[in-house]
Amino acid sequence: MTETDLPPPKTMEAPRIVIIGTGFGGLGMAIQLKNAGVCTFIMLEKSTEVGGTWRDNTYPGAACDVQSHLYSYSFEPKHDWSRKFGRQAEIKEYMEGCVRKYGLTPHIRFNKAVAEAHYDDATHQWSIITEDGDRLTANVLITATGQLNQPRFPHIEGLDQFKGTRFHSARWDHDFDLTGKTVAVIGTGASAIQFVPEIQPRVKRLKLFQRSAAWVIPKPDRPFRPWEQKLFKTLPMHDRLYRSLIYWKNESRALAFTRFNRLLEFMALQAKWEARKHVRNLEKRKALIPDYKIGCKRILISNDWYPAVDSDNVDLVTTGIARIEENAVVTVDGEHHDVDAIIFGTGFKATQFLSPMTITGRHGQSLNDAWSNGAEAYKGIAVSGFPNLFMLYGPNTNLAHNSIIYMLESQIHYVLECLKSLEDQRADAMDVKPEPQGVYVDGVHRRLEGSIWDSGCTSWYRDESGRNPVNWPGFTFTYRHLTRHVDPDAYTFFPSVSG
Image (cartoon, rainbow, N blue to C red; front, side, top):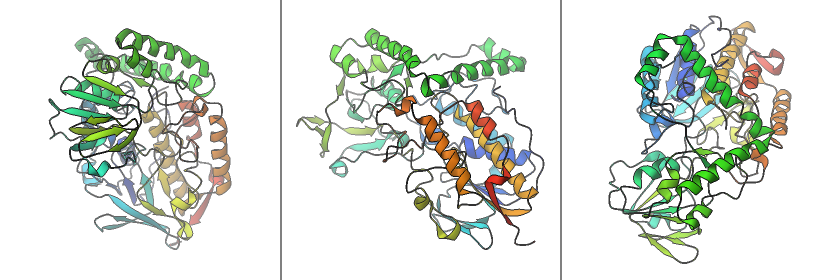
């Protein structure tokens, strides 16, 4: 089921815990720590507000591509979602409501970006240093920084020479008025398909630079009617049933992504039909249909992308960019595209987990060295050589078919079980052994072989070596089963230094 069908953790002794990040992972972890009777934790937030990606991404049209009732905590349902797919402001408001309801504000330290974290072999403590020089000590370090938090800018010659306004979609410049301007948008990913239709009617001309097309299917979105919201509130079982139906519908798609790739061709036909229906310009229509298998890159959902690109004031440019000059983007064919502003919809550094923080574990080993061949973690949570470091939304826990909140709740439960194991073992620290981690990671990558993400395209799912350290290759309920309990034999426990 989609509820948190895991047994509640027992009340445990209170270690000092530092949580990095106040997105869905960090807030959920904090709430469940309080529910378990642990209040000796501090949350470090680099910004002035909570919300993670839903605080940072304020671009026009920002919204979720997972249904609202499923993109929320199972233990904190919201009955009055305004739409089937929540928009940025409403999602952020939901998260802020959780902070108030569960009394998390006293635990949060704002404007505290973490620069370094070092493990002390003698004391089994983590020393955390923030960018402003503060130092904290903790028994347990939990990272909840997410995978989509560092904007990625393309390496283009002359970028710094541009004299107009330029910004990334994840750092939207709301002070710049786009009205009547000629605007270049570089990138046509998940963010661009949301903000391009919003800004297209306002700009004089939009130059849309597309490196590769995206598969775009319709978004089954609409506002909830007042009687529907009332029904969700007055009949909680209806709310839970609705959530469950969404979950199982989404979950069924895992088979298409991982084993039966041909099932995705039905989505490809749907995308082609939408393009044929909404794009009059034949050249644009042809350019908007990808040349790679659907699902190899993220499948996008939108109802207004194709009509927006088909508009007369939009130029779809598929020629590669050679350089950027003071007032223009120059393509490799020598054409100068004069623009007033450049907006980058070029995504995030999804495979650079925990970067740019410096994490140092046992015997002075850096996480960068441990991950020299690619990021990996036992159950996506623990890394050998880094005791009491637990990651939420770590390597190979991203989804292409369902809600990441479900995965996060599984991980949060597992971390609580780890804390209970420390108490049961009367230990200060626990470190996953290299062998279980290696067996687990090898198994994950074997299951990724033959998946749609292994079909040959270049995507943000893959790192520079071609490995996929991002996606989970199966059902979310399978992952939940894997994280129900801690296997003590998979860990080395370090006895308490105090005896």
